[in-house]
Image (cartoon, rainbow, N blue to C red; front, side, top):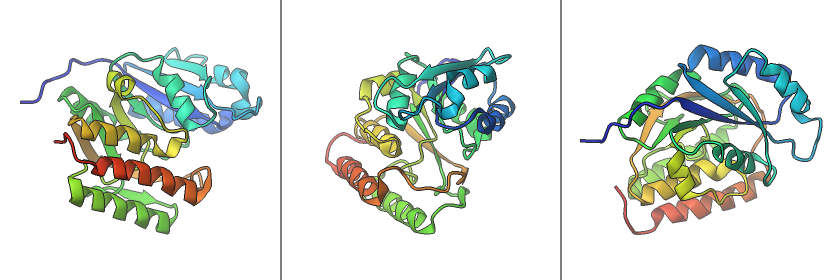
Length: 244
């Protein structure tokens, strides 16, 4: 029988590189779909632009009347990976949901993700490619590549999720601190952490989700850089060793 983990308030880590007017609908989505108590760490990643996201002042204005909202500035390498490291440093333990502020993720499934966590799963992976999942918009060629890669890794080694690059995930914070984040780009952090946990035999769950592409752009650095990062963690997941 799997151990039951005591309930702890969920934290959300949200890399931010958007104007406050874009963030308001996202905050309303959190208030509507995420069961309290919760705390949200918005990590301002300005990539060298002091006016990005309206600056700290613009974000802090959104925090008025929202005591659960914390504003941080990415103090590491610019980009999503650096923002995630900054956010996780504030959270020593408990469940953490990583999501982006473009309102493309379905936060209504957070209660189901927390249910998996309390049953002993330390990573919970919403998946566009699981039965019942879907993607609205986005590049069909990239979708086909990701789906094919996920299926091949499932067939070869029983990898626990078909959606390798979806950063919308729930993690146990202590596990993330133990695993560490090596990636310099944000688009492969989810694959990295899940591959490392998989090889350790960590309990990982998957559930279907609907994802809406609201960004209209590929990952930073272009397709070649994206594929190189994925190949690294694909090969890592294939290595012999401890798995469950």
